Length: 160
Length: 160
DNA sequence: AAAGATTGAGCCTTCAATCTTA
DNA sequence: TAAGATTGAAGGCTCAATCTTT
Image (cartoon, rainbow over all chains, first blue to last red; front, side, top):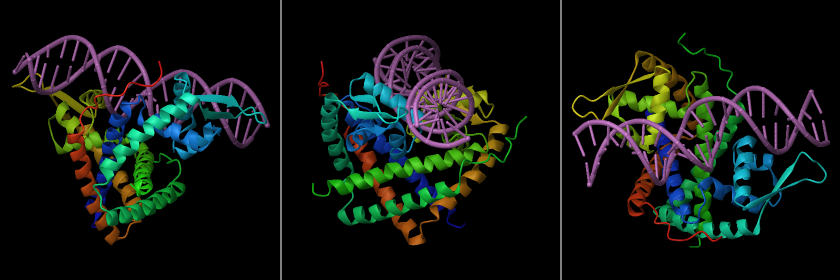
């Protein structure tokens, strides 16, 4: 437990990196009228033509309810299109519209340029190492998720 | 530009790590009735007794408006307290209440335990390396922030 | 009953506009 | 004018409840 401070430092650093990356993405994507979230959703919809709400919620690590409303907003802008599955009427299948595909391509250019500019501060060997560490950490965190389910709320909140 | 895919992988991995960490934090902190954001704010308020809204917005890398409302909610719960500065009536000085200090201490226990459990998947040498890389990346991203200001919106959105 | 999708409530966040004090 | 704080609008997110289809 002697290295707790060290772990907290790393932890805080990872949070900070996320905030900085997201902020940069937002600035870059503003030029094409998309948010980082919308960009990522469009990207997944292109990669999985006809993906369902549940499928998208799994790859984007969020709730179904969230996806439902993200898709609603994108559909309103005419960038994606929903249709019911023929076999199973419960499923909603999402796909890109022509306009959505165009917008996504515009966005990809500015987005990747922004990432390249910011991450190329790392030299090649650093990139390799970071890649390895990141993969390992994701595996560990995903495993932890399975071990620690919905948090039983075993402690009553102090006051009252 | 041959390593663009590699950079995108790292980038995506960092995003994923953030989401997984945040999700774990939320589960752990639910037991004491705080969100990750509230926990981080309380932590900063304790570290900087009497911090102003602007000061907090700077260390937490977000807008002043956001802090204003976070503080409002925490004050409503009786965890923080606001007072006007005597010299300069524009400043709002935030501090922990007794209740806030207690709650924060409860939270710190479960929070640090959760981090320790998840990050100790990394062995010591990996922790060292990751720490170095994270610091470097933060420096690079912060520098980029200064270079690339508010995004002039130079491109008109295609449609219309 | 179980699975997919949606919705209501509430918190978090940015951006732009406003109000107050210096 | 400038700086600090707040607020309105809109998007993003979780959680829990509900509605529909299997």
